[in-house]
Length: 181
Image (spheres, rainbow, N blue to C red):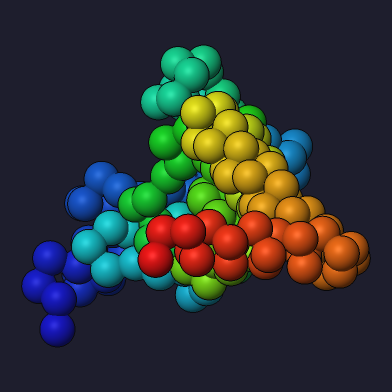
């Protein structure tokens, strides 16, 4: 089926491929390694892990070294079913920051997609999301837009609250139109 799959050659194929990852009994007993379940991993062109060791890596985002822990590897490959040749590019802290940015962006997209400009609550939420994303100009824009909508609503509501002002306004407009016509 897959001609380049190391399993095609059985155990000998795994050793020849150079991707064979295993641990001796001492490493497993001393907790330097965790025994892996290769049948729970997703692989084909790369050999499955038979053991997991802590790996030191460099974060692409912040440049700091971090440890890709053996427990996390087991979770990645056996629970989440990531391909065995995959690995994290960023440390946990940077991955969490990227996840938060993505979550904020998704939340913002949902609100903007169904935006009701007459709803000041949505405008406040949009403004806050932009501020959290460090996009201050857009945050200020939506905060200003919300304030303008509130002023417009106050003027409109004032006309309903004080009928005498409404009648006065109507009479002014009628007189203006009568003079112009």
